[in-house]
Amino acid sequence: MHVLLVEDEPGIANVITKGLGEAGYTVSVAPDGNTGLQMALSHSYDLYILDIMLPGMNGMELCTLLRKAKDNKPVLMLTALGTTENVVAGLEKGADDYLVKPFKFSELLARMKALLRRSAGNFIEGNKLRISNLELDTDARIVQRDHTEIHLTSTEYRMLEYMMKNQRKVISRMDLLENVWGVDFNMATNVVDVYVNYLRKKVDRDFEPKLIHTVIGMGYILKDS
Ligand code: CA
Image (cartoon, rainbow, N blue to C red; front, side, top):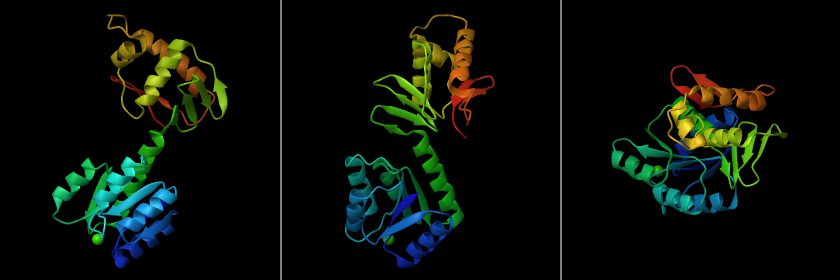
């Protein structure tokens, strides 16, 4: 995992670089926004940590430019205490989360892990949807698990596509009925359970980790952790 840290205070940059290095991350540091932008445009990073107050271009402007350049990697903003308006503005510019200085290193690590998990889970690349080792090509309508092609019926395919687009959210049986069957009939919702079981047999039974989970009393959730 390669992190780009844009931070002009050497003390903070050093602490973060050292801590993240010990936690197994590779960290590159940019001391100002313009350098950060150049680095971001010429390398591929898994996550950005952007201080808001920077010389030259600030962290929010940098975040705006990253999003304009279609870079959707997670952005964690660092902000000084008592500047909540910065936080709101940062989130509006496309940042995913923020931390108020001074913060505990463990807190930074926890936020980063959550963002990276979310970003890996929601991975949409062109026409591909992905969660863990399950991949669905929405153009060719090909499903692969661990590089093995899985043959689905059209109903099973639509169900899986809907679940992958809504991964990590609880999906009710009514959601599935409306979005997979496309009608709001008063059909017994156990048809959904039947199809979820078909899907489980094909997608989950012979593979790890298990992805389709039952949420008792609510429905289903597609997740890998
Ligand atoms: Ca600063």
